[in-house]
Image 1 (tube, one colour):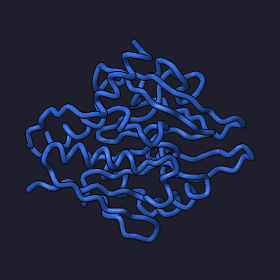
Image 2 (cartoon, rainbow, N blue to C red):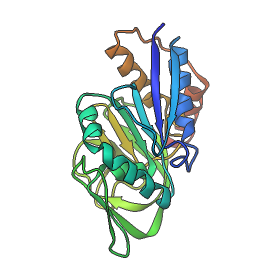
Image 3 (cartoon, rainbow, N blue to C red):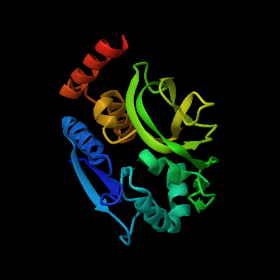
Image 4 (cartoon, rainbow, N blue to C red):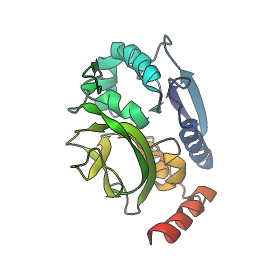
Length: 236
């Protein structure tokens, strides 16, 4: 029986907004395809093999926890970059998105070194950015619905994941949010992203199954019905 392996990285430190919900959505999605899914929880000082798993997921955490995670991830910088280039699936939500850039600049001028895998930096602002978003993706035609709660703007100019229709983008001069590069998906949108957007979840699952030459079967779910109701009532 085929098995899908998911590495939930820093599950204990980067789970501020219930990001485990995204893991549950993926597990349910693969189970609907009659595939066994193994979730391995890994944290600081655990050895992380960036060739071993099908999906690597990091969620959102406090500033203090984010710093701890950055320090631990820096030793894997080259391996992470190589795995991304080799097409491994990575999902970053919330402020873990910031870790992929050059640095994070705090309000007091302090700069925190990050992985420098992508050509952008994050800058802390005085006022938190909170609110719902409606976005479009080049993965499919249906809208993305999401929620942000953050205190950084980002100057990412390439490999955009979403185009923002309503709500705040990477910064106030941009209309784009997140990164989609090969099989990496990074967004500031929080915890229930894949639950609220089953089409995005299914897109990732189908892509993995296609690579494994496993036939994807369309399954109707409660999450999809909830999504359709939201779109009908609030977007249409």
